[in-house]
Image (cartoon, rainbow, N blue to C red; front, side):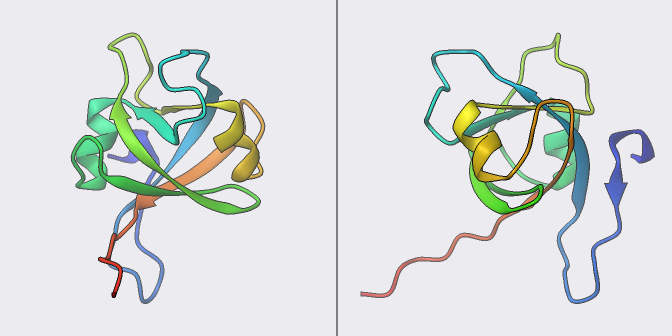
Length: 108
């Protein structure tokens, strides 16, 4: 898992987190939809399933849903659209911390 950038959770956090390299996803299918694409091994290392929510931390923190990337995407890469890159305060090629994001039901 060290090759994936798996880090021990910070004090008070139980969830694993990965440090991945941000790359621009130019696919029109995912554009402006809050979808990021991860290698299947990265999804497994995070302990999540496809379409689970993840938090993304660059200079800011945002959230997205995780889809599986194509087999041609390196394990240590995450694909994000331009809006998600901007929301996390990232530029292409920079490091982003990815962690599972707990979802809770909204109280009525």
